[in-house]
Figure 1 (cartoon, rainbow, N blue to C red):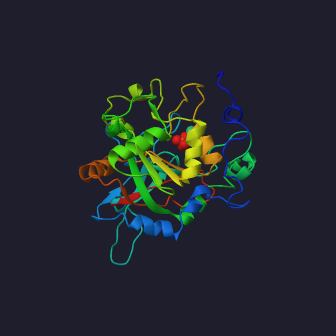
Figure 2 (figure 1 turned 180 degrees about the vertical axis):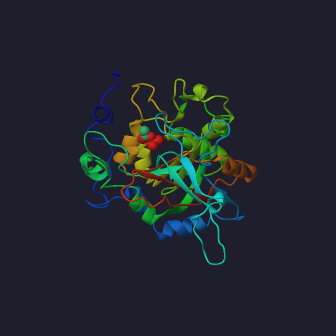
Figure 3 (figure 1 turned 90 degrees about the vertical axis):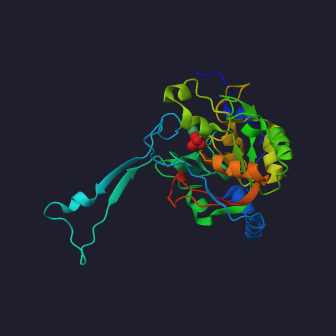
Length: 322
Ligand code: UVW
């Protein structure tokens, strides 16, 4: 058993919170900030019409396969109908002679680029907005991914390339940064992080994943780089009214907070307490290269995860248009 403090004790009884801000039945949290005005603000950042799809490939079999949180498995896709289906007797017949292919798939909903439901993590028996953690039993009755999927996530996106800012191809295992580093990187890039921005952060971690020789080296001492907890950082997110945090890591923050050893405290401080939606495992390298080439780091961001009823999360292929 780790001697890290309990989450509630670590974050404090007076932790910044947005519970109740959008009413007792809210399941969208800070996505409520993304209204029609924010869509139009995002559209103003389209200049060249370049489109970037931000999902990683799903079910890749070469190299290390798909990057996954330890214990999860990648998509198991199985072909159940193909041209050979029509080789034997009893094959379906359609007027005109149509043939077709079908697949089934077994997937972890968090097993690719994905949106987490706001109820995906919790502590002390309560999820986002104070919903009882027992509402997660067998299916997510409250704060599932469905309300996020029904709404869609559209607004001004801004990319902070922390790896490039630090002169690295990718950040090291366990390397951290905070809101002051984000502001410093933004200033160096010549962009301002504005209230209600969808915040994309590149660490280079996906690039690192796709060039590793063996998964063992990636998972040995597993500790992703990323944002690290401080109360000031959480207050910054609350003050900036950031609706959505998107990163190219599996879990959006340094895996273990360096001082306490506590795992994923920002999931709790940002998602459970503030209602910030998390998007993980995004492919940001092509977008970052284009932004670096002409010095434009803001764009229209649009995404909608799959409408999985009572889902804890869902795969997504976000789009950035610049
Ligand atoms: C966990 O919550 C463990 O992981 P993720 O947010 O990456 O799905």
